[in-house]
Length: 150
Image (cartoon, rainbow, N blue to C red):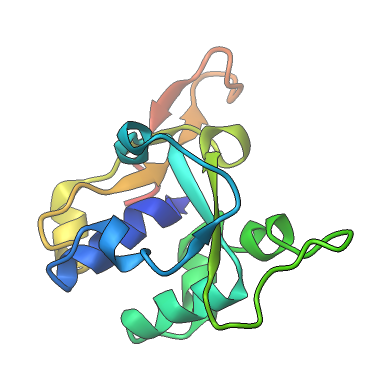
């Protein structure tokens, strides 16, 4: 499992003393999400290659490292690919698309605050994708747990 990209953006912004919206202010959005919904745990943001590279530079790691830690990372470029004459990019500004993370990568739950602090969370709340656990392993009878995540 792993952290949501939107949660990670919040943590990177906090490390610079910013809000997530300040950090992503230059990126364009392929769709619109109400401001009040941007803080919900189930919200996720997909990033194109330009935005991914910018985020990776801000936290001083290679984008490939983030791909291993953020389950939705690989879906961003495909979700924001230029299609049928749609004109995007070319000016160095990234694109993002809002999604509900639960749809593809599992339920979003709060991660362990102590574990996040140890990994540079700076006291920020961390949202991670959990996975079902239970007697049959199916989501219909499962309880959601992040024990394997952290």
